[in-house]
Image (cartoon, rainbow, N blue to C red; front, side, top):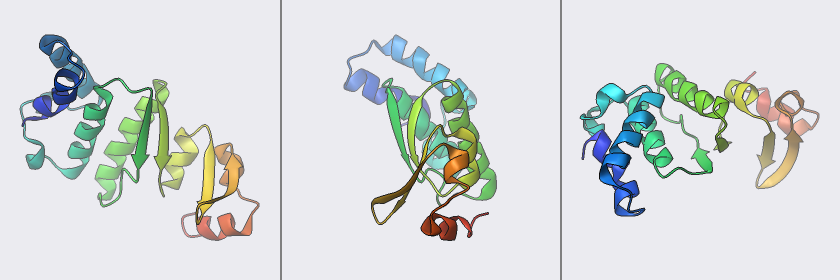
Amino acid sequence: MTVLQNIIEAPIGVHKQDSQEAQTYAMALLKRVGLEHKADAYPRHLPDGQQQRVAIARALAIRPTVMLFYEPTSALDPELVGEVLATMRSLAEQGLTMIVVTHEISFAREAADRVIFLDEGVVVEQGRPDDVLTPQHPRTQAFLSRFI
């Protein structure tokens, strides 16, 4: 399936949305993630960062109130990481609620309203990004010392 076909699949097939309405919205989403010119491309022919942005548009097509991202930039080269994080920053600025599991500390500092540091499933610190990312707890300090 093309990029556009991927994005309209769930709205039409699952949510029974009108085909033209789904296509119009899909094109708006592609524009939102900077890929409107790739609507007729096949995702497998796109670079990884563009594939990730198509996946974001596909998820947005069902109009979620919250999106979960689990390591959305893992296995991407630094240039592609920037593309994906810019897309996510834009979504945050537009008011989309996101739960993001990430090791991208600078992104968390810039885009998050709240940061939670977990260690083996236990909340170690939580709060505003500047509070958590200038940590008090030794475990958080040890973790962040690898990135800062």
